Amino acid sequence: MKRYSWSFLISATLFFLALFFAFIYWQVHIVRVTFLRTQILNAVLLTALLVALPAAYGLIRRMKGNGDDVWMRLKRIAASIMVSLFLTTATLYFVVSVLAWAVPGEESYYSATFTYVGGGRNDCSGAEVYDPDLQKEVRVCHPIGDYYDEGTLVVHKRTNTLGAVMMDGRVLP
Image 1 (tube, rainbow, N blue to C red):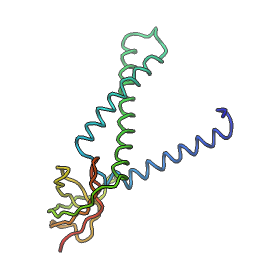
Image 2 (image 1 turned 90 degrees about the vertical axis):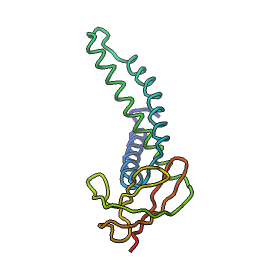
Image 3 (image 1 turned 45 degrees about the vertical axis):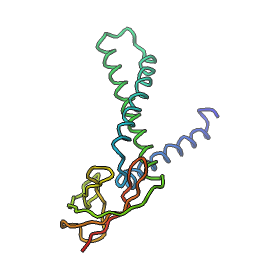
Image 4 (image 1 turned 90 degrees about the horizontal axis):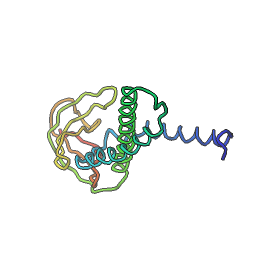
């Protein structure tokens, strides 16, 4: 397929539109309810570092302007390392969180005391509870019942090896 053909343009446009809408769906529906284990997050960061360094080396080797001064070369090296590290970390986090959301696991219920947490532009309002499996505070978005006061919440979650997905919550009267 030639790069200047209509078929290439249409397929590339459809690919980037699908990628854009997948990112929007991930941000609205998946990342808010998926919580990764600490070990998995550490593995994602280490893998991103190991992938980013050869990618940055490849970017540095392809750079032009060898006649530049030392400071310009150092700025280009630092920028290529930061950009490749950011892109690989974001891509790996996207893939691992989608896998944690999609992989089936053991469904369970537990009850815990919660506190109300208001939402903002990038997050939902809901109840914040301590999850014993993840050993950290997690947010359950829009649980059923009056969650504006403190109380007890029954959390329905699905746990797999990558993390946990908070299915829903119900406030006990």
